[in-house]
Structure formats: C-alpha cells, structure tokens
Image 1: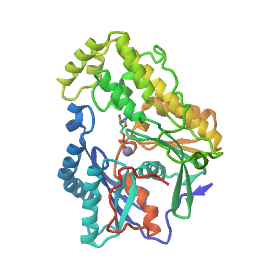
Image 2: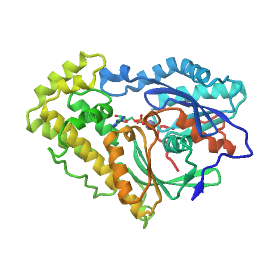
Image 3: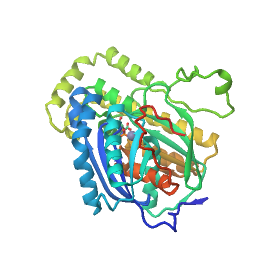
Length: 393
Ligand code: KG4
Ligand code: ZN
C-alpha cells in the first residue's frame, strides 16, 4: 500500500492547467495536485452540433477566441494572479494538432513572459490523474498498487498498468481499441439514430427507458494481430496478455438492424424534429423515440458496458491488480459506473471514478498530472510542440 502524501517539505504549489486538445477550451487552478481551486470549461458542443462531430478547423478558431477569457476566469475564481502562479501546465497531446497548438502557444507565451516553469502533460495521463485528484479531495490518500486504468473517451479506449516510483509515474499499455473508441461508437450510433451530438450523454439518459435485452449484439471478436502494430512478430510476442477492444462491429450491426427493420424514415423524422429544439430535454427525446428506438439504444449501451467491464475486469484478474480506475468522457455513463461498482465489489476490487465534471475533458486533470512533474522539476523546453498521437508511457 502506498500513501499519497503531498511533499511535506514543499509549500503549496498553485498550478494553472490549460487544455485544448479537442472541443473544450479549459483552464483550472489546482493546489498541490490535491485541491481544485477553480475549473472553467468552455464547451464548443453547440458549434459542432450541426455537423454531428468535431470540425477541427472550427475547433482551433474557437479555442483561439476562448482561451484568454477562460484563463482569466480560472485565475479570478481561484483568487490568483498570473504572478502568484507556481507553474503553467498544458496538454501536449494526443488530440487535434491545430487545437493543441492554441493551448501550447498560449501557455508558452505566458510561461515566457512570467518566467514561470512550463509543464507538458499527456492528455491521457491527465484523465488518469483526475481519479487521483478526486480521491485526494475526498481525503483518501491511500492507494493500493498495482493500478489498472481504463481511459475511455471519444478518442481513446486504453488500458494502462500504472506505477509510481518516487514522484514519477510510468504506464504500460496492455490493451487498446483496434478501431473506434467506445465514445466514438456512442457518438456514431446516436448520429445514425438521428439523436444528435454528442451521443454518449443522450444515450445514457435514454437507455433506462428501453429494454436492454431486446436486441442481441454479438460480442466483439478480436482474432488478427493489430494492423497498427508494424513491428516484427518477435518484438510483439511477449508473455504479457493483451486486452484489446473493437467497436466498429457493433456500429455495423446497428446499421444493418436499421436497414433490415426499415427504420430510415422514422429516423429522419426524429432528426428533423430534434434539430428544431435548441436544447432537447429527456422528454423531447422520449417523445421522439418509439419503443423500438428506445430498446435499440438500451441494448447498444448494455453491449458496450458489458464489453468494457468484462475486458477490464479480466485484465485486472490476469495482472492481479489491487485497484481499478475508470476515467474519460464515457466514465460519466451511469450504467457503466453501476456495473463496474457491482462487479468490482463482487470480486473485492475497488473501482474508482472521477466525479462527472472531472471525467470529461477539463484542465484540472492537467494541472493535477503536472504536480508530480513539478516536484521532479520535469519542465518542458520552450521548443516543445503539439503531438497529435502522443503515446503514454
Ligand atoms: O474525455 P472526453 O470529454 O473527450 C475526449 O478526450 O474524447 O470524452 C468525450 C466522449 C464523447 O464521445 C461522449 O459521447 C462521451 O465521452 N460521453 C459519454 C457520456 N458523457 C460523455 N458516453 C457515455 N455516457 C455518458 N454519460
Ligand atoms: Zn479526453
């Protein structure tokens, strides 16, 4: 068992986090990796909604527009000034290159002008540290290793074994999606069914109103070697088991179901009707979804939840971990949380989530992940740049 103590010799450190990897412009101040002092998120959802997904060019422009007021607000709410900050942390990747560059350029300019340390943070590490931040805020400082973290969002479905040596955290990837991320599947299926964007929160709210056993989706089959892994067989053949995911099959199965059951016309009516409502509420979705649509949504969510929990807990057993973290946008899902909590409890395995605001993209997680690097004086050089496919190690 390890105790998550702040460094007792160090005075409090106030770190400004900046996050702009996708469609949220976010800034936050976190004290010593353990207390969220302010957490501001400007969402671009409304702007991307008509396109049914994030438009990278629009995202960059919107980050550029929002970044200064969002940072100012985060400082004001934290009762901090630019000068009183101890360090500036920013997401380096993975994410949309143009979007990342906005946050990075701004963070560099601030760090240079203020002569403050600059810390580059991997977005996925941020999601993992959101769980630690949550637990520290609750006063839970004891963490049992080994830790297995499922990062499940719109761009990622990754399993990491996380270890801590002194201040430094290291990560070993033991599974990832071979195609679509789980959040991407939620978004694509919601779009296909004319429900709007982003799909996850809509499906989450609709699913309890349908029968999750109505439609059987086949479990994902992963037979061949990962096409993205170009290394020779010797290098990839390890004794360490892998737990990969695949969600393109369920999307295709859903498309086939829609065709076979002649749902196209009703979907088009639903899409047009919901598009006329500025901010549809649950009643609006319910009024526009017949039993068939609700059952389909509930069955889809059940299939994804069973796959995510089943594989994660199988990995937890195979690696004999003591603790499971579930984080990223999809970790906000009610059925996923419930299922993980129940199954984890049955196996005597503690499962931790961030609160919902810390599950989806935010900058508090970036400032929290930066704190161990701050203690280790692991600062970024002024010539570092955005890395759209940055790996976590
Ligand atoms: O972590 P995040 O905010 O951004 C990325 O790093 O991708 O995750 C966004 C994703 C979207 O695909 C969204 O549909 C999904 O998380 N999501 C949810 C829920 N809230 C957000 N999926 C399922 N249930 C939710 N309640
Ligand atoms: Zn994210």
